[in-house]
Structure formats: structure tokens, C-alpha cells
Amino acid sequence: MCLCIPSKITLIDKEKNSCIVDTMGVKREASLDLMEVDTLSIGDYVLIHIGFVMNKIDTEDALTSLEAFEEVLSLMDDEELEETVHKGDNCPNE
Amino acid sequence: MNKIDKTVKRLQLKELYSGFRDAEVIKSYAVLIHKLSKNLQKPLNIMEVCGGHTHTIMKYGLKQLLPSNINFIHGPGCPVCIMPKERINHALILSKLPDVILVTLGDMIKVPGSDGSLQDARAQGADVRFVYSPMDCIKISHDNPEKKVIFFAIGFETTTPMSAALINKVVKEKIGNIIFHINHVTIPEAMALLLEDNSHNINAFIGPSHVSVISGSKIYEPFPKIYKKPVVVSGFEPVDVMKSIVMLIEQVLDNRCEVEVEYSRSVSYDGNVQAQKLNNSYFEKREHFRWRGIGDITSSALKLKPEFSFIDAEKIYEAILPTQEINDHKLCICGDILKGKASPQNCNIFGTLCKPSHPVGSCMVSSEGACAAYYKYGDIL
Image (cartoon, rainbow over all chains, first blue to last red):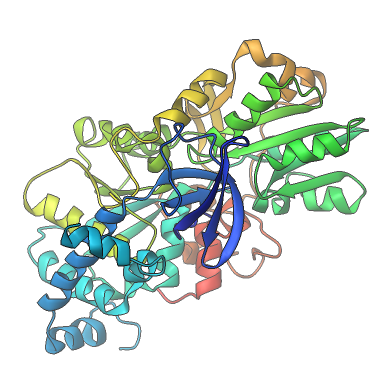
């Protein structure tokens, strides 16, 4: 199963080309073999897949997305929400 | 330090995923989708290619939030599900050889071949191990110098570079007792095959998350260009999927047809170039590969380059690995499910003869399979 919970780099071991990451409080080691040398720093958020760092998460981009969600939220009024969620033509509770 | 830098500093790990699961945001997107979809002239059938997205759609009940003219078609993106039985039989045969440790990833050990699963083989005395990371093979080989470690490598573009990294270590450090049985497959060829079938009803794609982290969004360029199907690469969280649906509807309404990336916090156009270089060092395309339930797909898988035949289990054990194709039970409709032509509820043996504990077909074997997701989250669609 692919997980996209971000992990935070807490330690980099240049000799082993690996790092220690914190994923929701769980610490584990991950290989840096798929990353260009010296592109990651302590504190960076990364995605881990089967023991490897796959990429660095663009936190600024994530933040922009989160801010965009605020705008989407503001589009919704309670009446529309009621209609969509409770009276939607696919709603199993109908 | 500007405002955005300060906010990024404050951004906590939790917010990087919880924000993408926010129930109110999901509902807001549902409202937006309802509004926009009223302008669609015909239903929009969206194939989510990846099993991870199928899981998200089922887990968060996203389908129930959508109007009736937006439909999901569950795609073939589950690497365990599409592994044909004859390849699983290879793993079984290899695992039963003397002095062999057969190593693979997670769900693979549960999948039955024509004569049981790797789990069964282990119960009968074979040394079968599943690992969290391919790199764990190094320790296993070190601890067992008298044994041969065979890594049964599976997965899409997402896991291919991890196998390549292990191969790189084995070759560079001349580790003599690790060899490979390579089953890596590539997703664009399978997507194209589905579209070549005239009876398909796919209008648009939600592109895989992690495949795209590695390969980049560039691999989907042929779909708008050649097949006139829009693609939005989506993250795995429910808000990602809802936002991607909005992006696809907007493309249709604007008469656009292109590759867009919703999951831009992790996916670039070019992907992870370092990982791709590693892949290219060791792998080349197979002429064809048979996908369980779907059939033979040209150039849809990878194999070791000839110069690495000394670590290629398929070459080393060629004489004892049969190539005969083995099909699924005739009652199983996984082929049609993987092609998006049927849903799990259309299957006569879904939930009765075929369950996660006793899977008959490929879509029930892994938690990422469509049938397993429907079984776990209820027959509520």
C-alpha cells in the first residue's frame, strides 16, 4: 500500500547515504540512494516508500493548497451543503 | 523572512496530511462538483488508475458525495493484483529449491498461484521472507552466506528504482549470493491498452500519485495528445481526489484536454531523474508481459539487461521455470473489473466464494484491489 504521510528528516548519515525520518512520531531509517547528493537537509519533509526517500515535499506548494482549500470552504453555504450531502441523488441514506 | 516563509516554518507535520483529509473541505468540493457537473453534457467516467486511489474513494465514501453523472472506473493499478499465476508459480518453485531464501514485499506472499501461495510454501518448510525494504536483503544475505537469496521484485514505476538501488549495491559490492526475479511493470502501456479496446467507456484519468513522483507527469502526455483523454495526477488524500475531479470537469467544460498535476507538492514534470537513471542502468523493456486478468501487453514490463544475466533468476533457473500461461477461475470477472467494464458487485462469487481470506481472483488478493476495497468498506455503492 502506498502511503503519502510526510516524514521529517531528523538525521542524515552521509557515510551510509541514509537518513532517519520521523513519521507521525515513529522514527525509522531510509536510504538516500534515489536522491541527488546534498539535496536534502534536516527538517525537510519527504515521502518514504519501502525504505527509500522518494522525493522532497514542496512544503510551500502544500501550504498554497491548504490556503486554496480555505477559499473552497468559503464557497459553501449551509443550505448547499445540506442539499449536496443529504439529498444528493447518490446518497445511500435516502 | 517573508510571511509565507514564516508560515511554512510553522507548518507542522500533521497539517501536511490532515489538511488534505478535512471533512469540511471534502464536502465543499462536493458542492463545487455538483454545481459544475450540471453543465456537463454527458456523464464523465473517470478511471482512477491506481489501487491506492480506489482505496481512498472507498474508505472516505467519496462516490456517495458525487452527482450521478460523475462515475469512477477502478483501474488496474495494483501490482500484486496484476501478477499472473505463472509468475507466482516461479516464486513458489524457487522458494522450494534447497539453500534458497525467497524474499519479497508485503502482500505478495498471500497471493495464490496454481499450487498455493508463498505463505503456504513457508508453512511447508520453504524459507520465504517478506521485507519492509529491498535493502533488507543485504542483511539476510550477510547473515546467511551459505544460502542464495532470491529477491522476487514486484511493483510499478514506484518500486522499480528501489530494486535498481539494491541491484546497484549487489553489483558494485560484488555480493555473490543475491539474485533477482524481476516482475516490474509500467503503467502507461496498460492505460493505452484499455483505450485501444473499442468497448471502453473511459472519459478521463486520475493519474497515480507515487508512480508519478518517480516518472514525472510527462509519461501521460500521449493520453491527451493521442487518445484525447485528460489526465490529472492526484495525491492519495481524499481532498486531493475531490480537487482532481474538479480539475477534470473544468477541463471538459473549458474544452481543454491536457495533463495537469493536482499533487504538485510531490510531482514534477520530469519526476525523480536520479531514480530513472538508476533504472536505466540495469533494466530494459520486456517485449511483452501478461497482466493477470487483462492479458498480454506489449512493452509493459522490465527485465534485467543481458549483461546482468549472472544475477537474473529467470536466466539462471530457466530450465525449471515453466512459461505456460495459467488463467483465473472461469467464474472470476477480475479481467472485466480491471478493464473498468464491471464492478465487484457484478461478480457472482464476490463475498461468497471469493473473500480476502480465500481470494479466487486478482482484485481480492491485495488490499489495493477493487474487490478487496469493496469487501472491506462495504457493498454500499
